[in-house]
Structure formats: structure tokens, C-alpha cells
Image (cartoon, rainbow, N blue to C red):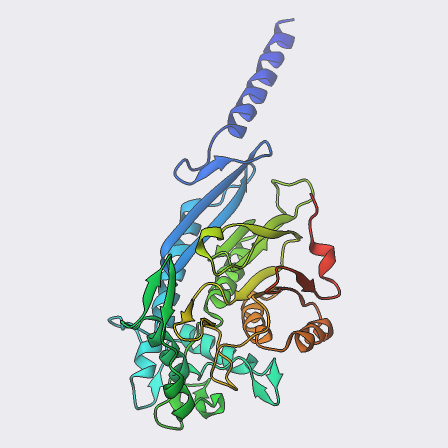
Length: 375
């Protein structure tokens, strides 16, 4: 009897300790209990990089033992580094970045991380063509600078939250720009970059968030952790089966595009997305101004063929396994005529997309419907 009592006490002690373990928060600075018992959601948010909010959620089960703070430290360090690399408006001590490249008249030796990013863009910029011209062009910066300066001009007027600016027609129509990406010389052995023509400069904004997501995602996948990485609500990628949902999927809301800031934050669709897919959106409603004279929308996605903002819809959201390629694809496909864009996506293996039109309706590619969640 005494032996039985001892065994019973030992069993109860084990159960008690296990129960306490399930209720122990692994890191109270970052984690809260999720919807499932024994699953904690640990989140770190960054608000000082890439002009947006970047968040990383870790889904931590009680049987795991990785260091949450180490992962979040890597996350912040990596975002900080690539923010400096991709910044074309500021220089940083000890770092050769896009600003340095654009203000240099000679060949430069780059850090491997920055060279790899530029080389990746150069290797994939011809994925989407229009009349033989790539619709993703990292050498388009001389034109992008004109549109950026127009949005920031002292001649702009803000009324009811909307910015109205003069359209820089003369500068665009009469300018001569060296924007051919083939005139960028890249040496993968020495990590050097040079321009073959004067007055050239580059911009990685069209893929920056997707590329940094890819870098972080590959590291997290190597660690085997479960996560949801959200870069500015326009680039979302998930890794590992979601332990907080019975089906292991992730549920993602698509923001209703609008140029009326008073309605921003509504959703037009919910997606049920398996791990391993990136969800990337490009649209005309995030950085734009209204022309003072013509009342037209002038947004930041510039067509390299016309040097003017392009696109026949308000937004495109693509689903693809590679977050960096998804960012390039969403930017370039947005600029295609809608019928051509749908045909392109339907023919591209593993790629799906939905387009939100100006009248509030939307269309999507052949296989996209399987990802729509109807509650």
C-alpha cells in the first residue's frame, strides 16, 4: 500500500509538473498564449525600416526549446542591415549601399549580401516582358527620382488627407534617361558593380521587402521553427504547419485598395494559405498623389516603357513559393494589360493572382479560387 501510494504521488507530481510547463510563458516580453493549449504566439514588431511595419510571429509549442530572443535579435539585425544596404537616400559609415553606388562614378566592390541582391534582381528582371522590354527594371531610378520629387514637392497641397501635386510632364517627356539594365556590369567573382553609361542609378524598391523576407525565411526554415513574417502588410510568408489552427494553414486578409484614407483598413477577401507560400501585393494606393490639373492618380509603380505610372487595376496580389520572385512578379505583372496579365499568370507554373479593379470587383487566375476562404 505504501509503495502504491508512493507511485501515485510520483505520478501526480509528473502530471502537475507537465501541467505547469504548459502554462509557463516561454518569454513574457514577447509571447502570449494562443488559441490552442500549449501554443504560444511570440511577436516582435519593427517600425523604423523600409517606411513600414515589419513583424515576425513565432508559433512556439511547449515541447520546443529554441531561444526566442536570439531569433528576434537575428530578425532585427538582418532587417537593419538590408535597410541600410537598400537605402538610396542616405549613406552609412562603413557601408557601401545603393546611395553610395548612385553617387559614384567608378566601379565599386560591394559586400556579398548587397551584390547578391542586385545580381538576383538582374537575373530575374526579364521574367515579365512587354514588347521585349522588361517591366521590372532596377535601372529606372533616374525616372523614379522625378516622380518621388514630385510627390515631395513644396508645390503640393494636402486637402482632406489627400496630396495634390503638379505632374512633372515636362521633365518626363523631354528627359533622356539611361535606364537600360543591360548597362549595369556585375562581376560575381569580385562582387564589383559599374555603370556603362553616365547618369545611371539603381533602385531596389520593387523587390526590397520580398528579398529581405526571403533572406529571413531561409534562416528560419533552417532552424525548423514555425513563423509568420509580415512585411508592411504587402508581403507575407509563413513557414511550418500552423499549430494554432487544426488544418495547419494560415488565414490572411486582403486589404481593400482605396485612395480615400478614411476607408483604409477594410478587407475584400480572406485567404486560406498553406505554409511555404508567399502572399505579395502591389497597388496604386500606397504612395500616390492626385494631379492638381487633371485630378488623375499618379502612383509609384512606373512603367519603364512610358516612364509614367501604369496598370489597369488598383492592385494585384500574387501567391508564389519564392517571396523575392513574388515581389518582382507582382510589380511587373501589375503593369501588364489585364487580359495579358491573366494569361501570363495562368501560364506560369505555381503562380496564382487576384486583381482588384477600379469598380470594386475582382478577377483571379485559374487556380486562385482554391485559396479563398469563405467563413
